[in-house]
Amino acid sequence: MGFPILSAITFIPLLGMLLVILMPKENQKAIKWTALGVSLIPLALSWVLWANYTPAQVGGMHFEEIYDWIPSIGVRYHMGVDGLSIPMVFLTALLTTISILYSFIITERPKEFFALFLLLEVGMLGTFVSLDFFLFYVFWEVSLVPMYFLIGVWGGPQREYAAIKFFLYTLVGSVAMLLAILAMYFATGAKTFDMVELARLRPFAGDMFWQSLVFGGLFLGFAIKVPLFPFHTWLPDAHVEAPTAGSVILAGILLKMGCYGFFRVLLPIVPEASRDLAWVVAILALISIVYGSLVAMAQWDFKKLIAYSSVNHMGYVMLGFAAAAGATAATVNDRSIAASGAIFQMFNHGVITGGLFLLVGVIYERTHNRDLARYGGLGAKVPVYAGVLTVTSLASLGLPGLAGFISEFFVFRGAFPAYTLVTVLAASGIIITAAFLLWTIQRILLGPFNDKYEHLTDMDGREVISLAPLLVLMVVFGLFPAPILNTITVTVNNILGKL
Image 1 (cartoon, rainbow, N blue to C red):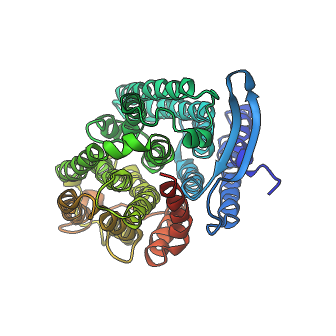
Image 2 (cartoon, one colour):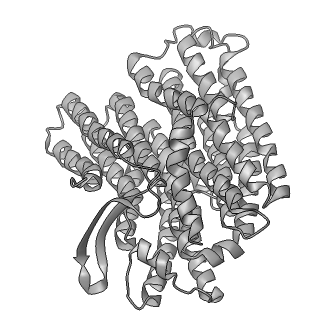
């Protein structure tokens, strides 16, 4: 395709942001519809991108755009996608559009809210399509600033604390990642920031001391974003205080940026360190799975419960990475299955947990509380909400026939030969997850009806339209996962084949 589709997908939201800024703040309706209309363009283009991607075409990047940017230091404007990034680009565009539509209820400073949301989309999309570390780092940092303000201005009572905690945690990881990037840059005689070239050159190959240091810097930057235990403590605060749309993007996309870094950067560029330290990642993944699910079960705040479930679900992704990276009894096929499952889990978690946070917002807007002890018997009063919550919760706990099951099964199948004991122990997370989600359904929808909610209304058209695409993806990819798995697996095999 001669058309620079990746640049268009990335920067059209920036033009939309400028358009929103120029609009009079009194015209709230026009601001909201403009933001929604602009967000539909990257969504449509990302669908075109996926439709024109040929998984059978082995190796290399697709739809590449390469221009000299700052030649004096070897920086290039290099964009490209493959089976790892295309699903993430589509998911980012989809969840942004859904979040903007849901946020039509925002009445406090909507002009600034929607402008920041479009800027956030630029940062997220740019991160997934950048193939130059300088460009990657710029977009990575761009996504940090709008989320800080979205939490800090439109969040809950403790929003300032949560926003600062989120910012500082992520910034520490970013600085560590920057130092690792500079180390790789100076280690290459070509002095390049190009990810594809660095994956070919493999700086510090054979030098495990320096390679381990670089791995540590990159690992810290990505693990905080995931977040992997013990770097997860910023997440519950940020989720609980963020506005609903902010929580959707935080769980659906920003966490995936960290997971994406593990597969895009660590595995191809520092494979020896990834192999030797994979057992550490596997242990931390196990702790995240079990700890996240147990702490989620202890929560009575609906939103905090879903936040801790993200720690649990991201543990599966990291277990898949550890199985793919580790040099053990596992075959290449086992490692491919584990990595494919982990990347599919990234997509599924964005769809499912994004839906759950929307459902938290729906009930909170009506009841103005998130205390599960104060609900009860709402299933008969709000049947549409009850149906959507039940399906989404069952997808999250990994019910066969829904998307969550396929990805988790792939992770366990791929990880079992490499980390048998860890995988067996991690499987307990599925049981605990099923327990706390079924208990949540019981506390909200079943039991005696709370008369306080006699005038409660069911989901309106805007809310149904926001959740419908996510429900469709849960069912379609649960029954027919081949389209997305074919996209992912070719790229996974290409990465593993070069190790």
